[in-house]
Length: 389
Image 1 (cartoon, rainbow, N blue to C red):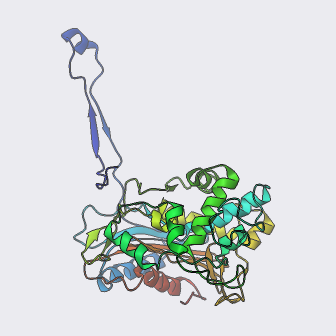
Image 2 (image 1 turned 180 degrees about the vertical axis):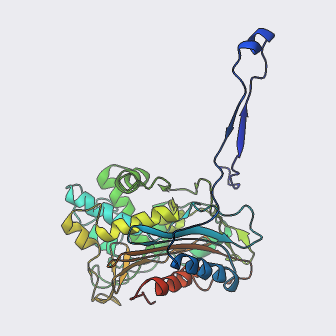
Image 3 (image 1 turned 60 degrees about the vertical axis):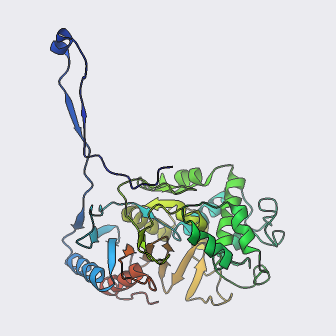
């Protein structure tokens, strides 16, 4: 596919190019259709904290050398502020509703889909996954519930040196599950299934295979019908390739030793990177996750319960549950993918939602997640019990 950055057409003139004089007399007038230009800047409520949030972002752009930042904050269901701020040199300006790669927050959506399928009798969360992913080591003892909570002991393929070298050599190449599994299983399992916790992209990739097989639907259809459409997330989509529609939040990175545009790098090495969304849509999702809007009461409670407490480093105060990090009453996500630095934070009671996406400027070493730093400051401003990391 054409990987060039899409250009928004501002206007389209439709005319009649060849007709007779009599046809000209009866022909309708030439019609000019003007496409909506994406809004840029900031939309603020009358909440005085909105200006303070904007100031936090503006300061971070300079001090952290961030190329662009998209952000949104809600107090309950009320939007406090939403916008996009760029360095002055960025052209075109990032749209308020620009789309970006989502990464890790999609994992909680997969957890929700798994719980839905189980309630519908289409998936047994506690049965071995061998019939779905027979090549997964310990597939006869690993269950879908273990995959969703990253407690199966399957090594993560991302740290594999050969894998990292291949991604760096050509970041536009996609990956199949079989290829990713091959890198992951070059090392032995980390622990016996269900006995500890270790984050594993491999287990998320395996979970997608299980959900598709159990439901008979593709990842794209599962996400659309079970997450996006019920929540009216009209600017969200899932892909198992590098598709992303304008208006774009363009990503930049120094990861390969040169500052370059990484917007169209293929995200399938991260599996969950194939989801695109806006800050508004992710905020809608985080509130729905917190309230259990897409689940029955029992599954909603399970989805954010301390199911991994006592396993590995997980405790009752900080734990991983069906794709979410839960810490002291906050639901958190901190993706970093192909130049996109993201952070989501949802305080459950009282409800507060923070969504921030950033990308690095030329001198940024990307050793820290700029979106996380901004979100932490916003949390300190907005909440009496802010999260700490």
